[in-house]
Amino acid sequence: MYSMKPVIGSASQQSATQNSNDQETLQLLAAKQDKVLKQLAELREQLVSMKTELNLCSKPAQPAAAGSSGPTAKSAAKVVSKPQKIEPINLSYLQDFVVNACPTNIPYGLLALKKLWISRLNLQVECFTHSTVPKLSEEALNFQKVITSLEPKIENLPRLKVTLIWKNVGTYTEMITSPTAYVPICGEVNILRFLSRCGPNEFNYERQDDLTEADSILDTCYLLINKQNVKDKKQVLKTLSSKLGKVSCFGGNGTISLCDIAATSAIKQVHQVLAKDINPNMAKLVTRVTAEIGA
Image 1 (cartoon, rainbow, N blue to C red):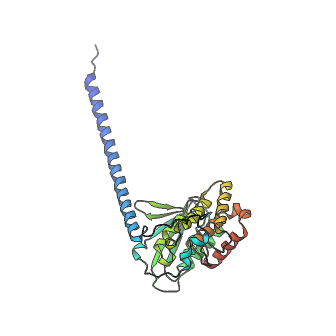
Image 2: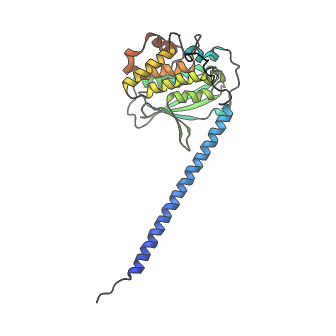
């Protein structure tokens, strides 16, 4: 006769081993969950603090008047043309940020802000190239040369440092505001929105009377860059052109606003596929903004 191992004992040992493995898996999942919840709590605290400091809710958007066909580009930037009380820059906003951008979608808005703020804030930009980008185009190299060599003539200005990394992220340019939790702000337009709140108060687009229309223009610029279908891009460009109308710029009264910067950068990024669809007035806007502040 042959001797056999106890079947019941073997099954019990397997069950105990399985239970032990399950327990370890649950403990690992619980630890990961605790880490994620902690990061979310930290992020929420940062957002609440930022919202309070920047006073984002201090001024509600103004509704359109009854019987109106909707706000226009002129009304969208009335406050830009009015004198603004210049306030000291809040240094607590001036963190170091990282921007990942594809060389085929150059964030010209950064250069525009650097020139626009040059007497109030030093937007210092350093450029690096990620391994996903084998070679930079001439356009990207020229942009890099200009934005890194341009320095304020006024000494001891507050400084906001941006590390620009050329990386294959497609049209979705992103800015990292919290490296530890990796909290990205996606899209150049949204990056411009964020930075406008951090910079000199007189250039903060949220101080406009008709903030709703300004946000609508900025949203349209975002769509123009990120719509993947050419037909859709053409429709968005048509919408943006109608918002500009016959005025010289979205800022009204000849004043360049954040909407003009975003629109110019967006049109430059889609120019290769939509060159024939850009109407003369929009082309004039791009030429003017490029000449004055390099967007």
